[in-house]
Image (cartoon, rainbow, N blue to C red; front, side, top):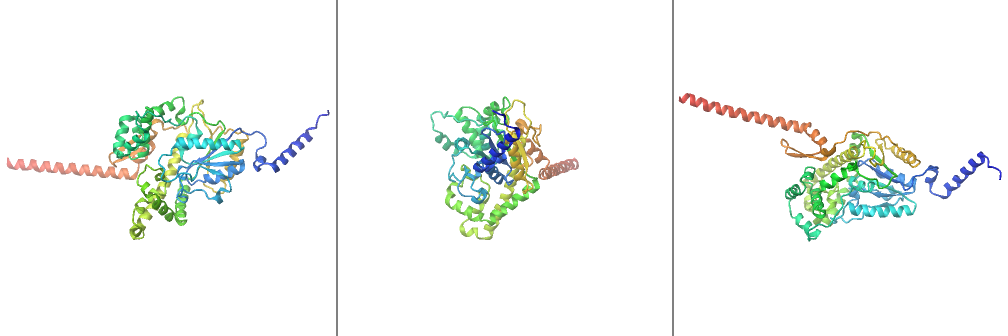
Amino acid sequence: MAEIPDFLCEFMRNRFWSLLEKLLHPSVRSYRGKMRENPAIFVIGCTGTGKSDLGVAIAKQLNGEVISADSMQFYKGLDIATNKITPEEAEAIPHHMMNFLDPSTSSYNVHLFRKSCLEIIEEMRQKGRVPVIVGGTTYYLESLLFDDNIIPTGSHYDGKSEKMFRDELEELSNDELYEYLKKVDPDWAQHVHPNNRLRVLRAIEIYLSSGKRKSEFLAEQGAGGKQIGGKLRWTNSLVLFLDADTNVLEQRLDKRVEKMIAAGLKDEVHGIYEKYSEHLQSEEYGVMQCIGLKEFMPYLKLSSEERTSDEGSKRFEQGCELMKLRTRQYSRKQRHWFDNRLAVKRRPDAQVPIVRKLDTSDKNTFISEGLNIVKQWMQGDEYTEVKGVTDDVQGSDGSLMHYCEICDRRISGRKSWESHVNGKNHKYLRSQKKRMEEEKLRKERESQQKEEDKEAVAN
């Protein structure tokens, strides 16, 4: 048989792809050549950076589906406060792990989340779909990204049921719980604030259920380069971390809260409170971690008549300002996580995902930039260098608690501590305290001098 000329082979190859493009998903035309097996795309980053929009765009391009890793959006209701994607914005792309928990739920955890997500992803892959994990709740994201970074639960309750232990612990105050934690796990107690009841409870439960301290689990994970995650769950994992210029992002977040108010935020929190008020008195319920609910509790606890008074208006406005503040703080916390968990150089044998940081300060360009990164990665680009990677890792003192006697505050982490001691408020209080001590010393000297003068006159 005569050999087929090269030009005819090229024509036939192009004709084949042309026909395939008409029959299959549009993403085929973008990914001729090498394709990755079982890819997983993670779109993570600071709140307000456009993660949902980019997630939808990637899912459309890859014939994928979106999994939400935003713990605030697990709960039914609070669609406005938690900025859930609308059906119009979703553009018919299936979204999973949203609106499935009742606000009265108190027992949902990362283990249940991971189990559900892995089942969903397996179903997706059987259909030839690509999972696009979108969100900013870091612990939940890491449970999917890494294979062995979650502390297992056990059943070492000494004959008592888990519920009995939980009931006993719930009766303790925050200070009592913290003292208990200091007894069973003093090392971890240095890394958690006494008022962070959920984290204190979780550390105690780990010890009671497994017979092992949380600090011991973390130390084991830290061995062998696991301090930043461990073994990758999927070798072909791409992480896009979205951020923006700080000033641009914080202005954007403030405007977003204003839009929420205009969209009916007040009525939404009214409805949630009226239906679940008995479950909103304790931070035991996960929904109380949602920014956009707890900030309005002083307002919601007023009677219907009081809410319409000047005091009610004042409290609602205070809630709005507090919501803006905590949203800005949350975005900084997410950036801090990236800087200390992903954007660091690791030892050569550590398993890490491909990470790309994407600046979304310009809303008009970041979608196309993100899609281009995904396209190139799908075709084999490994992105071995990540812009913004640093050698500086905080290490074990990254979450260490510090106590400021001057300000009577506990500060978590070295960077936060350095920021605090160099801040205006701390310096002002320090100078005030110094002046007060100097004034007290002056008065003591004057009093002592008067006593000495009296003795001299008497003699």
